[in-house]
Image 1 (cartoon, rainbow, N blue to C red):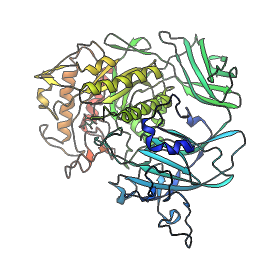
Image 2 (image 1 turned 180 degrees about the vertical axis):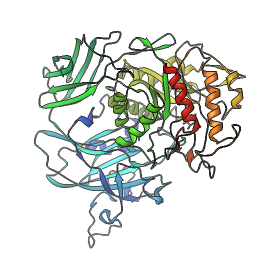
Image 3 (image 1 turned 30 degrees about the horizontal axis):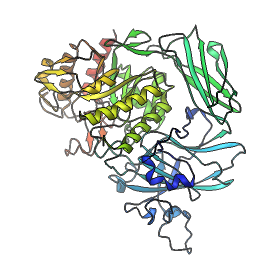
Image 4 (image 1 turned 120 degrees about the vertical axis):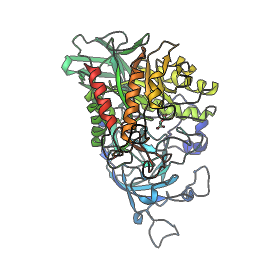
Length: 602
Ligand code: GCB
């Protein structure tokens, strides 16, 4: 599939049809980007909102852009052009546009970004612009040339600009489009804010002419002291040498690339200390391939299922989790900084979690890095959410591509123990077929991790039978339920019982209730902290009786913005099911969950 194509006339000409094409070749996506030397392109970028899509000009296939791209530096007195980037206001990158400008709060559509940059390219190198994430579609131009496109709002991409840039001053234009459409992933309706823009950092990355674009190093399945993996070197001839060293283990290994540039490793590591929440041991590793070197800090652990148990490093584990959105504490908007990650995961740590569900799309990579360090296991998800366009091949393509990008970016994080393929998808044969293909893709990309999904729990009377056919494709069954909030009263929750015909491990991947921080009243009054707290207490009575329960990720760590939540004075555009408010106030249920998890640890 081609979801990001690089500069070429053919690529541009095929732009409007590219969703229907399939190729075996994935675009370059550099792993471990934060360990590479980068020149930041963060900071103020000029912007022009374009609700009528004027900048595309008259040609619908974008091939002759006569709008905001050509002559991005409009000079007054020159030909009539009714825009001027240099005199246009700026938005901070990284950052969504909605939370930066009141006028863009509800804006969805096309918006043009522009900035200048200076570069002095070195001979025999490749130069990329790395985008951490752009929501949702991005069309990138450098010095008036179309260099790449990307679809999918929460995964990274690298645009190659070797040969396009001049020594000295250059400029970049990014057309960013967050229009919700039926065929996109996510689709037109989701319970979170459709934050638009260049939401994660942007940088220039220069690599040698042969370079490591991907590597993997993990414990061999079924062992605790045998490491295996590969290094992929773009541009390397067969037989090129690759070395891998892990100084703390006194390991130095050599391998040679095959005709595809791939060098495989497999060797014993007898004194390896395994990564776990109690002992999140990371090892510094370094890889050398010709002129290229890459360093990383990674951990090693096994994760598997046995019957209805989840085994971490061969021992049963209970996942004391919390779900959360990638939304910035205190200031709202998309989270992207280290400080945001520290606050969010700091709260999870304070709750005595050993697990987090990063809902409902891949979060910033710094959260995965921090989870590695803190010893938090991670559920990582793609935004196949509610009613996707199941029978539309381009929709499947883009879902698969987001899955591929998520796995590619994060497959060396020991913290990630499961990939989630979907959330609360309505049961149908088309849905089953679509997610089955995602499961096949995930297993072939990463055979070492577990596959899960969050499924809607349907109760018949007071019994939940966990028999959604989707479960057949999964290793771990996630089930969401809102007893005491959308269904039934809190006091009835303990009467519900669960059956698990597939016999797989089960996580209750959502439960919760809304509460406005500081609103107090009787436990029967919705939106009070007491009501929410009572739902949690009653849930624990029920959950404690499910013999095959292997974890939970209550909904949700922090209040988050959602246009679906309009109750004045209470919601005001926020889903209030957070245990912490968007201003960082801890609600009663925060302490109840903290206490519950603390007791579980003993
Ligand atoms: C759900 C969804 C989640 C919503 C939540 C709610 O089932 O998975 O995205 O935000 O319910 O608050 O209703």
